[in-house]
View (tube, one colour):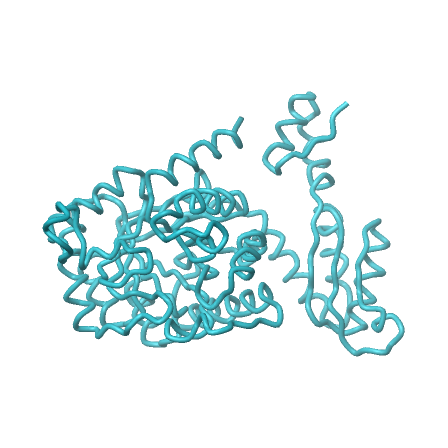
Length: 407
């Protein structure tokens, strides 16, 4: 006798090995998948209807005691049931008053998004197929003050006697080519440091650093390029040179950026950041971390859509290390799969971050083991793209993880 801890993709395989009829598999599969669905701040009337309906299906719903006694007007609600029960609940809610038909639609969409494993990102001449394996975004820092010490604007692999000086264009191109050879599916080019307390860089300086590199790389490598910037003028210049993705750490706060991206029909990474690089790590506080980040993404995605950006071009990034404490970062990585209800690919950047340094008491260049473990865990928890410095090592770790999962 065995107690099976089967991943979703294993359930059909297990039933097929038992030689269950295919029709029976389709019926039983939804009964084997259990979910917890939390709905925030709904009326007591809605909560009590949900509880009654869930109980009638053999499932349950947890609501505040005050919602039962009438002491409160609103409550959070935790629904507990199988996929089959949630499907039946959605059908029943369509016939209910009190705006429950809308809740039915939202519940159905959330469940569909949560189960979605595959995405295709059309990025100009590039097409990224997400879901078959975790994609890697390799980092090319054209800065002189990167937190990780890899800023190519001041370093190169020359003998120590040569000292530190800006890497040549040839070296930077070779560096990016090496990342692709090591397994990078995307190259992310940034010319302004976003580490805590980093000095701002003018658009002119950012352009001078990034544009020559982008022009050369577009001709040299075959994977899509991303530009890491929050300045519309820099993004425009990069897009004109052939970049396929704009990676905006400010989450499209600048409306000009959203309009620009919509016009170019390029991909966009919308990242969550509390505050800005100058103040983001000064005692960041959240009432409810995941709920607040989720609310940010709902609003940002809707704003992007209103600006004309296509939904299928959007990638989300919860912003590890951007306005978060070590505990916040760990919670995000542990809860990463919750963001799948948004129905967009998830990008995560744990590479060499300070939370790893605090756990291991290690300097940025000594955080490779922490980067590997957090990258593998992020992939297991639903990350579609991992943004890293150490591409070769992370690719190897993910390859082993994916082989184990496919076994």
